[in-house]
Image 1 (cartoon, rainbow, N blue to C red):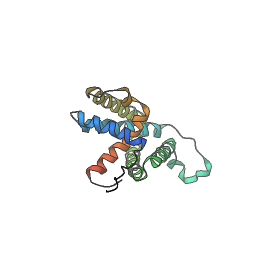
Image 2: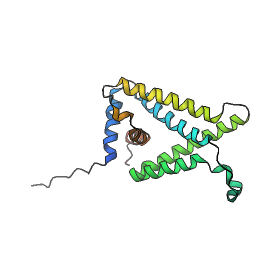
Image 3: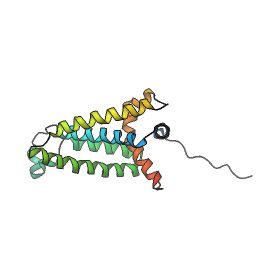
Image 4: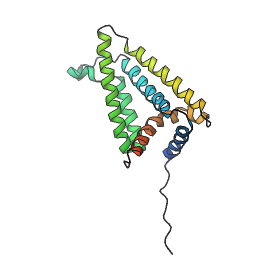
Amino acid sequence: MKPKKQEPEKRPIDQYYETYNQLARQVRYPALLYTGIVLLLFGLVSFVWAIPFPHLAFLGKYNGFVNWASFLIAIIIYYYLRLSPPVSYLMLFMLFGFSYIIIQLEKWQKIGGMPLWSVGVIAIGIGIAVYVSVIRSSRIANQTLLSVKTFIIAPLWILTSVLRKLKVRY
């Protein structure tokens, strides 16, 4: 008799992934779900980036490189690192991309463009509107999908679904 193959133990994060997988299968436009999540995360990072950071003399010429968003990014990456190390590295690259865009928006603001904090608020508003409308249009619309913890897991779910489509083990 062959020994029974053991199934890998499910992690708590896998339950959230399964909830999002069900949602993505039921919505008409899954790209809207991805867009809402990414806009929310980008808006949050850009809004926190715009909060004035005190001048710290010991930082010297690196004073402009440290801000409140640096701490937010560090906390996000630490939390994701504990959940899924390979995916947290991808998230770090995604946040670096956001940082590049935010720096360009700061340059635009200096020459008369829209303030960075307002870009963040607009991105958060559009992201929330899209995210909530997608969830409400699905058949599994429940309060679990609107919880803060579920939203925190959402960017990881996006990255793991991309890895799955590319057939990369994570």
